[in-house]
Amino acid sequence: MEQKNKTAEKCLRVKMFGEFSIRLGDRVLTDDVSRIKKVWMLIEYLLVNRKSAVPQDRLIEVLWNEEGSDNPVGALKNLVYRARTVLKTLDESAGPELIQYVTSAYVWNDVLPVEIDAEQFEELGRQAAEETDENRKVKKYRQAIDLYQGAFLPKSAYAEWVMFKSTHYATLYNDYVLRAAEILHQQCRYEEMVSLCEQAVEYDQFDERIHRYLMEGYAGTGQNNRALAHYNYITNLFYKEFGVSLSEETKHQHKMLVEEFHNLEMDLSIIRDELKETYIRNKGAYFCDDYEVFKNIYRVQARMISRTGLSIHLGLITLVDHDGNVPEKDVLQPTMERLSQCVLSGLRRGDVVWRYSPSQLVMMLPMTTYENSKRVINRLVLDFRKANKRNDVELRTMVCLVEPVSDS
Image 1: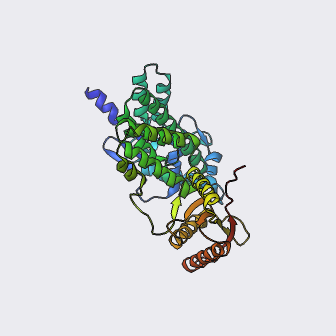
Image 2 (image 1 turned 135 degrees about the vertical axis):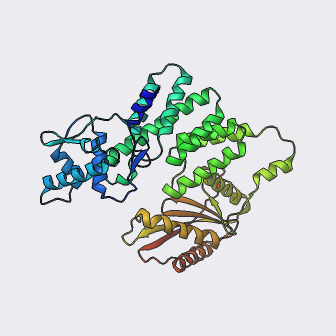
Image 3 (image 1 turned 90 degrees about the horizontal axis):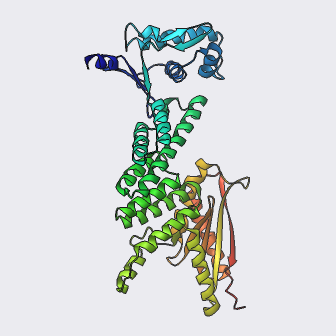
């Protein structure tokens, strides 16, 4: 046992997910220490590629990229010296030997065994995929998932080789989560599903598949309201970030959950209370964040005007730059937020607003003439100009009449 502990103490444990650190026994070296970024990059690259020697030219390309150097070979030698000095803080004797020079190349010397979380993560995933027992398979996936503590080498994320690796590991992480969640779902282990997926959406908010498993988990643990609230949350999230609606598969799942939750109810007041708004976000128009809902409202209104004879108009406001194109994302997102606030607060409670695209809002204006609708839209444009300090965007507007449903 004593020999085993001594062997463990002489093993370099390297963490690359969420941060970069090297541990040897009770000594820890982290990239929080203020040293030149290229020193850390050199150590990281040699560790990741430690199974083969890395030519000098490749290291120069990785470390200096397009910066250039008057004496790149000399600069690399100096960087290697500095890296060896850093590593000496882990082990006085082994430190200088960890990076070796071999025929115009540098190589990480495995004089000390090395364990890297990213490599263990991938190996556990391979073992899980080959496992035939479902319970052991989930256990392996969970072990791999627990190793993923954030993006791969986040402080070196600007480097091209790190970007590639980071994307690779993030994709694997989602794959492991989905495979584990599917088994947990089949075995009705809903509490574990919730725990797994809640952790996963912290790292990737935009994988709908994980959100669907999370909603199934909430439903399976009796958290029906939470499942429905989560659907509303991701609906708003996708509209806010991308101006798009959720996939048909997610919408269908939501519909199935709603149907499942509503058992036979004989008290009409309870049904009424479920239908009414529990929280009114603004005193003005109703914001509809679902295309199917907006389409159904439109069709009901079109049926009504064929009976009442009252006119309803649609208004369209489009945000563009001075060339008539969709603004860049860093301009588009905050400016559309501001426009939405102006439109919602400037319309009546009975009006309905829908975000048609990332840069467009559609308004349904009941009981208005064409002239009044134009005046309303122009007023909204003026309100936006007062609230918006940018001069690199403009609004374009249109108004048209909602056509009544024909009996033919």
